[in-house]
Length: 187
Image (cartoon, rainbow, N blue to C red; front, side, top):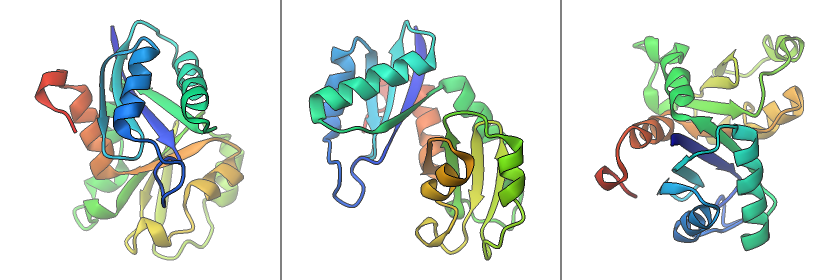
């Protein structure tokens, strides 16, 4: 069995697309996944599966949410090891002058086209910074993620990919939870 982390985009945000986590976990179990756990109310689910293709898992979860909750939402699924590498590669966490609370990671559905990244790299984003590596965009938003131009919609429009963002604390907690047996941690 392989451990996976799914990140659902756009549920329980601003009172829209409400799904109770107990119901979402139940749906995952009905889809045949095991050791299903969720973290906070924004659609973060850790689970195990015999399936080895993230795209087929994403499709299964997306179809399950559509069928059970009537919502068309985007799903990104990462292997535990992939999330660990993304966290390790965060260039901002090496800077002792940067506050971890201002760091976010935007997860992308695919590796972005370098020419599209090049078009936005020199834009004026105020004090906000970003760095792209593989399927992750590392964000530093000292005035808060809610105030940045560098949000999901910006990256989806500019890079023509699905994007969903989690703060560094949440991304780290997901990785830690995925590294523990289910009886050790549950929210």
